Length: 78
Length: 249
Image 1 (cartoon, rainbow over the protein chains, first blue to last red):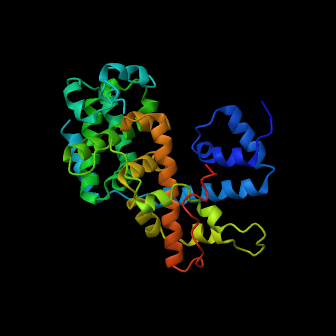
Image 2: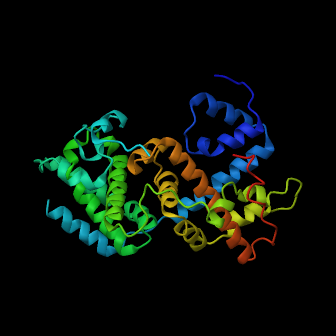
Image 3: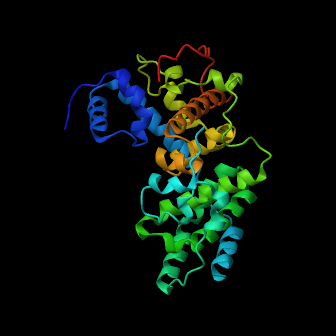
């Protein structure tokens, strides 16, 4: 595991890709290492993470009963 | 933009579907012609399929609703997705992949319907970035706009924005995004698809996925900031010039 230092600029540049799990393992480990020690970058990462959670929550919805009935009918026809 | 031809698609996929299968083709409108004849599924397969569909119906509908922005259209997308998925069950190599596979069918179904309507801008058409809102928001960061490093009070402005924006505020901000941006954001952030999967679904290169995602997030954050101002969650502050934050990526 590489513990090569990564700068704040590099962390911010990669932050969304890191949160999306789109960085390779080595980069991810270096970002985690940096976030554990840099309060500013940690605050930013925490903010972006919480905002994403709100976006995800806001996108949740319950399917109407009408759709459940429609799907049951569709599956009965298979 | 280089279009992926059907013959090349098999090489681009992660491998759990047959190259002739429903999801192997990135152009959803062509899927019906490529469907395998309806296979004899075992009772076990049928039970598995019905159980999984019931478990995932809310999530399928929620994703379709954010893509279509219309409850009736969302229901149509989900119903067509379920029909397609059943017809393609024989193509699924691993039942553990069912959920991701199903959401990819949902996306393909939606894109297919969206293209069929044809009245809106074509998917390959890049957003007109001369639009002042879009271009001004290319690098907008809500955190940078609000964060005050030496603030020692119990709540920071950025925390207040995240906590106090209403669900409807966020939904509205997502729904207002230009279509390509919204599709990409919803597929990655709401459905959890990888950039590669989104590229295959939308038939665009990986760089385009990244670019649309960056722009979608910037624009979304700018609109949330505006909404927070309107709602009095934060006080008015000047918006940075469009190029002022270009140094940050």
